[in-house]
Image (cartoon, protein in one colour):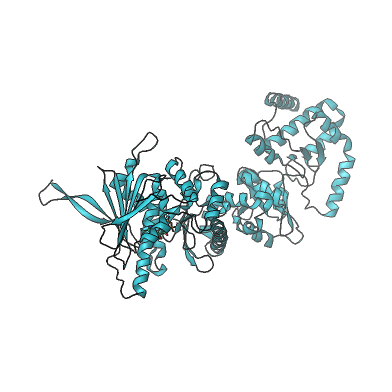
Amino acid sequence: MAIKQFKTESKRLLDLMANSIYTNKDIFLRELISNASDALDKLHYLSLTSSDVKENDPHIEISVDAKNRLLTISDNGIGMNREDLDNNLGTIAKSGSLDFKEALENKGDVDIIGQFGVGFYSAFMVADQIEVHTKKVLEDKAYLWKSTSNEGYEIKNDTQEETGTRIVLHIKEDNEEFKYSKYLDKDELQLLIKKYSDFIRYPIKMEVEVTKATEKEGETKTEVENKTINSMIPLWKKNKKDIKEEDYEEFYMQSFYDYNKPLKTIHYSVEGNTSYTALLYIPSIAPYNYYTTDYKLGLKLYSKGVFIKDEAKELVSDYFRFIRGLVDSDDISLNISREILQQDHQMAMIKKSIDKRIKSTLEKMLKDEREDYEKFFKEFGAQLKFGAYENYGQNKDVLIDLLLFKSSKEDKYTTLKEYVSRMKENQKDIYYAVGDSIEKIKAMPQIERLLDEGYEVLYFLENVDEFMASILMSYEDHPFKSINKGDVDFESEDEKEKTKKENEDNKDILETIKTSLDGKVDEVRLSARLKSHPVCLVSDDGLSLEMEKVLNDMNQNAGIKAKRILEINPDHELFKALKKTFDAKEEITDYAKVLYDQALLIAGFKIEDPVEYTKLISSLMVKAMQ
Ligand code: ADP
């Protein structure tokens, strides 16, 4: 019998398969099992339309002959005749050979294999010879298709009597890189079947040895049992009303190794151009590595109940990466030979729809389950804030109304919308204060008057907050204004006029203070924003002092410097006293230094020279007591 050559594309793929070292070899089992399941589907369909065709206990069987290194996968499905064998197993990538070739070329390596599956040929990753014994339904003759991959294949008559297909893999010998023998280990095979094919609709059977207790105490016996390995009906395919809350929770905790129950379960199906079912969870606690690059997205992709891949990043936007669960779509093909571009498009559609669903769920929680939403936000809110400002605020419309900030209104969480609804009549700006804690913010000199006059101030407690505000700039046309910066103007026109005049009248003394500080500050001015405090340090409109801190923490050599403005309270006793001593220039210099250091301390910075500071204070104290 002449040996036939594979078609060109097939050969190329075969080489890739036989030599692949990077690919996840385990997937060959998934591929063969889903082919078997398809063959059973086809027979089932025929049995509905033709009275000659009967199903007889449709199932898939896995058996192992470890001694001879044989792994067999059989099904009693539709089977193949000679023509089928030639057409189906002689050519790969029948329908989309061009796309496949392109994908190979564009994506470079074998990554695509693990992601999409390439069907029957993947068995050559683990086997150096494959035999397919098969007999098609309603036909008399059985055939044997045999190949050692690169040599091509041959087809002979076979003696198989039952309808169906039996695929025998001669498992490769172990080498240093890989222990192929794992595919001859029944425990290992059971794990793989559970992982990849648990929800195949037909039973996947395997003869396994089970140890049982005998009637005699302490004695056991080993029996061979024909066990069904897969659980067949996936939870997410069940009718929602038949699923209990505990079922969802258990599934979550088992699938994602989380000891905590999920905060929220989202289970729904979409019918249409791209149909899919999603079972999604919002965890109640962020994983310890959530805000690091080690974090792995817990979203799985299935196609008709067959596991395709973990970490399905293409199915959800990065700002919702806390979501866990799975998506099962009938429209995503296992086989790369079908339109790969089409798949990309379908994936994009699903992603859009999933994003929308997560968003509406969060919105609903925010509205109806505030407590839970706040719990969620504590864990994952920083991610949303980051999402709102990254790429210059490209996604801000999606996310902005989901953001919460602590605010001076009872120190509780508020949305921006709620803040705006409470703004004072004449208020244009959204005020925020940056600090490590609510206590520290409340102690800031700058905040006192604002709060006294009934303005609400958002507490920006996380590094991400101010970066977000500086990129987004405003919310519903209300600019974000930092009270730690120089341009907060809530004063009346009269007041502003008064302050301006005061600044002019005291030009000399302010100038002297600035000179005394020897370049440490860019400006010294009187300000009406202070109430009981004598001084404060602010920055101007651009980079804030807090951002300076964050950026320099991230990169020690950044040497980033915000503009520093020393603001003095003109109504404070201290300033009045300063004016009196203005003539004693030497003392003014000392006072200026002390004032500046105090402003630094209160803004949460280190003072440059603590020794000089204490010396100055001591000498001033001595003078005061003399
Ligand atoms: P795909 O299943 O995506 O079409 P494969 O390379 O896995 O690609 O299989 C090629 C074809 O071979 C299948 O479409 C099917 O017609 C046939 N085939 C494979 N396995 C079986 C089987 N167990 N029983 C019947 N036909 C099969």
